[in-house]
Structures are given as C-alpha cells and as structure tokens.
Image (cartoon, rainbow over all chains, first blue to last red; front, top):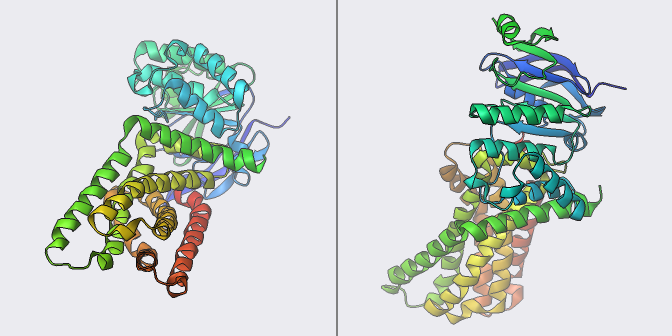
Length: 231
Length: 227
C-alpha cells in the first residue's frame, strides 16, 4: 500500500523570493508528524500547498494515491484542515456551520445529520448545537473547527498551529481530541513553533530550515530534542 | 460526482447560507436599501430645481442608483468570507471552485434585485409612472444579473487587497460602462414605449455582457483565489 501523503520536491516562490526549495517527505497511515521551524520558515505555506489552497511552483503532492496538483477536488475529499483561523461563521449556530460544510462536501440528509450529532457530542458541543458561534469561547470554537475538519472522515488531517490562543485546559482538550483523531489509521501533519504543547502522540518531527527539511527526529519527540534540532 | 451533487447542491448551500446570514444580521440589504432610497430622494430634490422632464432623466438615475447600491453589497459579499478566513473553508470543499463564484454572484444579484423591487415603485412615484412598466422590470433583471457577475469577479480580485472598498469601484465602474449604457438606453426605450427594433440591440448587449462575465467568473475564480 502506498504512503498516505507523498510530498516530492515541492517549491514555492513569493515573487522572486523562494520560500520552499524542494521539500520532500512522506506520511504513513497512523503517523502524527510535526513540522517545525522558525517564524517565516514556510510551515504555513507548506501546509496550504498540502491542503490545495496554494499551488506549488514545482514538485508533486500525492494524497492517498491521488495527485493533488492534477486532481485537487478528489484530493480535498481526503483532507481535513484545522488552522489557527477558525473558518467558522459566527452568525450561524454550531449545527448550521457543520450542516453547511457537510452539504459542501456532498453529504446528505439523515446520514449527514447523524454524523453532525455524533461529532458535536464527541467535541462536547452537543448541548450548545443551536447556539451562535459568536457566543463561543476560543476553546469551543477550536473544538467546532475540529468537528468541521473531521466531518467527511478524511484520512489525512492537516493542522496549522492549532494551539494558538488556547488556554491550558482548552489545549488539553484539543490534545485529547487529536489523539483520538489519530487513531484508526488517520495520518496527521501539524505545524507548530511551540515545543511545549501538543507534542503528545507525535511520532516524527521535521524541521524546516532554509526552505528544505533540515533535520528529522523519529521517535522520542521531546521538547528538548526539538529545541536541539531547531537550534 | 453528478452535476446535481457537484454543482447545484453546493451552489444552493452557499446561497442558502448567505441568505440565512443576511436574514439574521440584515447588514447588507438594509444598507443598500437605505442608500438607494436616499440617493433617489437626493436626485429628486437636486434635479427638481431645473429639470422639466423627468422621463428623460429617470433611466439614468435608476442605473446610477442600482450600480452604487449594488457596490455596497459586492464589497460585503467577499469580505464577509475573510472574517475567520472562512473563504478557506469554502476552498477546501471537494467541488469545482467555480461553484463559489456562482453562489456569490447569485446572492449578490438577489440582494440587488431586492433593492430594485423597492427602487422602481419609488421612482414611479417620484419621477415617472412609466418606470414600473414590465419592460423596465425585464431590463432591470437582466442588468442586475450582468452587474452582479462582473461585480463578483472584481470583488474577488479586490478581496485580497487592503484597500478593497476603494479598489472595487475603481476597477468595476469602467468595466461596467457598456452595461450601464445599454441598460439606460434599453430602459429609456421601454419608458418611452418605443418600438423594440429601435433599442433591441442594446438588450442584446446586456445579454452578451451577462454571458461574458458569468463565463469569465466561472473560469477565472480559481486562479484568482489560489495563492
């Protein structure tokens, strides 16, 4: 069976300035990969390309065997994204937000309603399902964001600095949700610049430096090992 | 994926979402309506001092009012998706991204038509009763559809810039001039009850404008939003 995610020598330029200069790595099913790097290293740019939100200048990305640069619509059906932006409509209720995205993902009727209820219960928001998102705390919004990302049961989850702005208890709840999401053979790629949070369950870490994968830590991903690799 | 699931359903979902949001906030249509009615009242007072024949002026006043009021709605349509970066949520949907353009353009047309439904009878009262003739409604429908297509396309370009409120009219108004000209002449034709052969080609220009900009929006939306 091929890797869940294959990134092959992708490059990105902003104007004439190269941000990424040939990044390559793979992610297997069940792996939780952290992508680290200093501010401006290109972590978010990389994640946006993996999510098909931005087109690479060169290289290829295969998601679950699908060429994401040639068949982005099919690839998107296999990707869930959580970013530090919530992507949540504040004038819709939690339920309406998920129902809207379910429809955009081609989910219909009772089956969609069942998945939405199950997810809202999992992220502990079922009691607030009919409340407007604008009344939610940052932690609740982030839980709703995770529910949105898991709505279509994607095999690949992409997380861009998901702990930004979360307090300790919300961060703990997010970690628990991510550990749960990582089960069942789902692959996770998470960008972060924080070495202290959200590393539970991370199986491998890649450090982006100079537009390339500068170093890699496999197993024993601790804050100390990461600080040493980034330094 | 079938045409219904890949195109019609996501477009309908997007339109429904925008209409529901507007029903709750009443931000866009209220602002457009107040602006449009105020513009008509201002024209009424400003022109009444000198003008003797409002029938000549009314089609121009109608279209300037609709274009300006429509721009208010266009500004909001894409910028509302920038809040919480909701646009990324739309772009992550596994469908052709042209559905986002179509959904937004349909919503923009619906909002502007809602304004027209109020504006035309007000014009009938203030300026000339011929402004509510069926032909005028038809030209208004076509003109608004054309303007919304071009406006949504330009609003998409403007949304990623800092000065989007300024950028949109600067780019859109020159582009919309052929439509504006055709709409004013066609409206005048119906108001004057002229034979269709005299102004029918201008209705054709409006239809051509619709085809051109709705096609361009469908084809260009993805490259415009993709970084």
